[in-house]
Length: 149
Image (cartoon, rainbow, N blue to C red; front, side, top):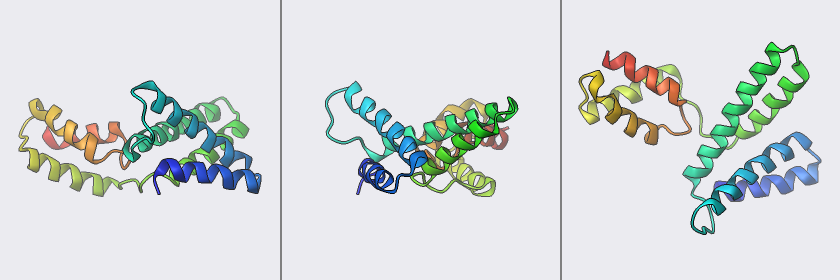
């Protein structure tokens, strides 16, 4: 079952269970999926990789919003955002630990044959595709800089 189908099924289950937070989060994800499908040439179903990008983007936005709400002393809104992020994370692959990220990036650097910062673009191109959804782009970039420096 594709991620898009899992989200649609999750919407139905959330409606039956009257789980408003889950329903709101999944409907939001479905909205972005539908927009992506209609933006370009007509596609019947969005590939899982594209759905993962959408879900990880929504999870990151929710985390950022929760941090802002916490700074503004609005714990009610922050907890609501974090609850939706938890729903999104159910669909995302497990995030890499810092040690796993270091090992993956070292392997990619060796595979690409990069030896200096001039070749960071090559490494980032491969790393962004391979580690999509499993690590944040900023974390990947920081690790590549650290290892190539």
